Length: 345
Image 1 (cartoon, helix red, strand yellow):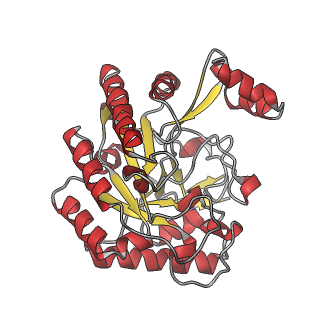
Image 2 (cartoon, one colour; image 1 turned 90 degrees about the vertical axis):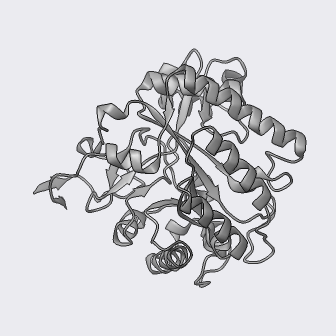
Image 3 (tube, helix red, strand yellow; image 1 turned 180 degrees about the horizontal axis):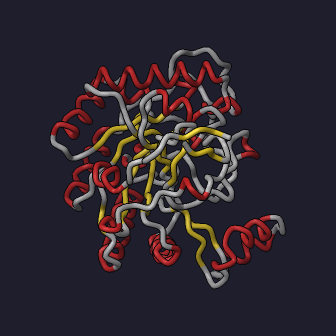
């Protein structure tokens, strides 16, 4: 029985003993999470109604592209999507074919039970009262199980909105992986979580340390990248200096996503993360981006063509660096067993 230094919540850096060392045979791999959600106006206030689930042709096209590239995406899926008969049938086919995995993605403003007031602050489910977060999570898990025959084991909070109780609730609900931590980002100015100082590697979370945290991947690139997060924070506090450093290629923060990030930037981030020793490069984007007109990133057919060209360039670079895709099952098999019981100090 080992005494742990904190309760395993997802807003604190893990203890050194919580770092997960993957099976060496796993090597350096990449995974793709798709935040699979309803379409809504990103510039409007949050609403319980007025959304759609219509980007299915775009999702079909995207799935075909990734399957041809040997990638098995993980579609973390929210309530409006799983509640759509057409979307659930389409994704059920992918599951049956072994071409994709499905997890949970929670947008509290459209996820029952509808208890809380719909506000920007309440859009982060982990910052709602614990009982409300639990009830919404259970409603989503039950709907996913009804549609796909099993409860989900992988989770990402909408807006990355985990809170103090989220890891414990995820453990209790039977999840094995969370991928909500967007390392090196701070959303506290928008009522959300602060992930500054959290690592890029996978680690054990939750009070029982049975939950694997697989953070989204973000790199620092540029001539000053070795200054890392500390230097980036100092530059952010210096107003125009941050922008100047990014424009001149001295220091920039680059998440692994095709949304708002150029292929050249993503390639620089890949190289930086490999240099850091990150064992898993965790890519992500939002499912409505696959259909023109739903997000700021793909507004028309030309943007969609550019989206796939981005992936062509990035996948070519990953291949040159010998970074192969990993499935959810392969990742879980590379995670060592947690060999002892735990208690919080």
